[in-house]
Amino acid sequence: MKIPATLCLRTILLCLTLLGLSACETIPETEAPQAPGPSLNEEIRQLEQNEQYLQAAELLLQLANRSDSPVREQLILQAIADLILAGQMDRADALLNQVAGQTKDPVIQVQVQHLRARILLVNNLPQQALEILPSLPASASANLKIINHKLRARAFIQSGNHLEGV
Image (tube, rainbow, N blue to C red; front, side, top):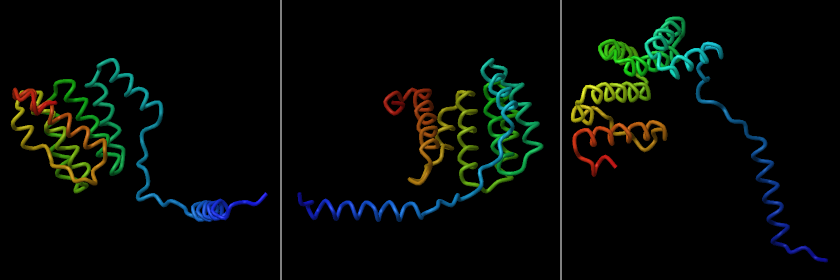
């Protein structure tokens, strides 16, 4: 039985490709930030599930005070989201100003704008929320794009423009 030449060529190309890929090693762009321990994460998650947002925010802020950048900023942003849910808009806005003034990270800046838009929407100011929502570049993460789209849709619906809110 004779093996077709194209099958042999495909097999050789597949072996060479796999050999080449196995020699590659991925290099992370940055080290992953160290998150709080599992027990603290669980406690925060439990508080949020029980709608005890203010307590969760306080715990997150305590953790942020003991953390280094960029973990500190992410913990503060998470605390701000909980403060919004707890109805503490003035405190959330003050913390947003603090984070915005301390970082030049474009992802964190977009997250700050998203949280500002949430505060404006809670205060029933959809036009202002639409004005501050950023235009995201094509390279933005899918998660940021989804959040941006949802906030824009919510703002359009609140402003009475149900066609744009879809």
